[in-house]
Amino acid sequence: MRAWPRAWRGSLQFRVIASTLVIGLVALACVGLYVGERMRDGLFDARRDQVLDESARSTQQAQDTFASSNATLGPDVRRLLRDVAQSQRTGTSGEREVFLLRAPGQTSPVTGGAAASDGSLIDVVSDDLQLAVAEGGQHWQSVGVETDDGRVEPAIVVGQEVQVPVVGRYQLFFLYSLQAEQDRLDFLQRTLALAGVVLVLLLGSMTWLVTRQTVHPVRRAALVAERLADGHLSERLPERGEDEMATLAHSFNEMAESLQDQIHRMEELSAVQRRFVSDVSHELRTPLTTIRMAGEVLHAARDDFDPATKRSAELLQTQLDRFEDLLADLLEISRFDAGAAVLDVEGRDVRDVVVRAVDLAGPLAERRGSWLRVVVPEDRCVADIDPRRVERILRNLLVNAVEHAEGTQVEVTVAGDAHAVAVTVRDHGVGMTADEAEHVFDRFWRADPARARTTGGTGLGLAISLEDAHLHGGWLEAWGRPARGASFRLTLPRRAGIRLASSPLPLVPDDSVAPDPVLDAASRPRTDPAALPDLDGPVGTATSPTGIRAVSVHVAPADPDREGAVR
Image 1 (cartoon, one colour):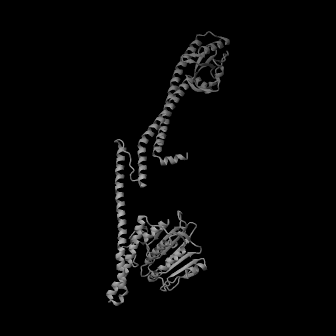
Image 2 (image 1 turned 90 degrees about the horizontal axis):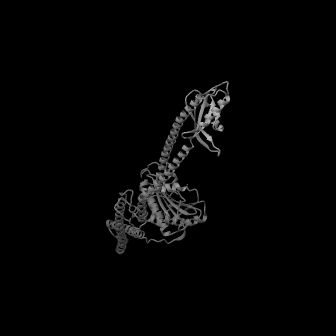
Image 3 (image 1 turned 180 degrees about the vertical axis):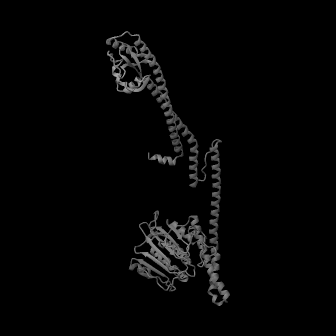
């Protein structure tokens, strides 16, 4: 029974057959009830009319016998009653039982008693029937007669008054059995039930055959579609005949052929594109090296130039750096597209990687007026990672956060559980909409195309970071709201092969529920790097080579060894 709901939901053929059988059974039951009632009423009415006519003639014959009798004494009258009862037992439609009973309230000086063909059945004549006959006319009543084997047979009792010499009015009753009609009715009902069962089986078989001819091609088409979706582009439906299913198969095959052709073209175009990007990136390495050498010479001698030439040398050096970063990112993206990217996995404490990435982002944060606050757990967060790729992810997230923080604080939080390690980077800057958060990892995508890249980004950093996270089997997610900042969460499995189900850190910050006021760039609070924020635990300070103090690291709870490592 528990499998039926699954079959109902998962099989169109089962639903059609079950619905057809249920509707057919209900229709046959209604027709059977109607036909059975009609047959029963027809048999009963015909037999009743026959019994009434026959009993009326028999009553008249008995009355004629009583009228022609010369009995004057009690014994003669009793003998007369017995003779009439026995003579009337046989009728035109078969045997019947006859009862002669004194009418209710009738008295006479001569006692005639009662006469019956079978005295044991006198009790089937009810008092109500006797009272109805006493009022005059012919009356009948349906009764049940118990047989010797304990069965109850249907019967009908018909009564009418007669005048008996000397003793006065008597009531003559005839008991007719309806068992023959009941047997005929049972036979007809069994025949009807058998015909109904055969009809239901025939209906179910026809429905199964029709639905199979319809559903089987659909199932085959679904199977071929699944094979196509799995990459087996050469799968086709067999085309047989010229009916609608053959037309469907032909159209499906044409669609599959067109899809296969388009996919092959796209694969070839993608391969050409990847090869083009890789070739161009490699070919540009040599002229770029030459240009960089010349640019470094000019940049080193810029103090000897006039102001315009000096500025040009500085711009040339900056754009060469951006160009070199772009080439490196293009090469990395081409490796991901070609499936050639590999992990150099080792067991590392993610806290060390985070602190190193924060230290590298410190000078940029100082220039932009932002403070980097790092919260790391006391326990080690060891995971199987590629430190170079994870550090690149964190560096991209930190640069992106500092660039859009607009002088506000950037918070980096690290946490871990038994299965995963997570890092969140939260800024309180301009933020982004939910739609922008869905596209933030797209290549070369910007929320505002007119916005200048002040940090020299290539537009591929977050896309590469997402590929690096997927290469680890992890997640990289983004959340943001306008004027309320943005949050990026990196979740990595502790061991290779673990399928992530949850993250130790929430993506949506706790302070995102309360509405923040919308501030413009001029009124947005800015962070003074010289003023350390108040922390509720030990604080370590990471000092950059330039002496800039723009990073605070918070270890909760206290861990002297960890604090020394931060320094």
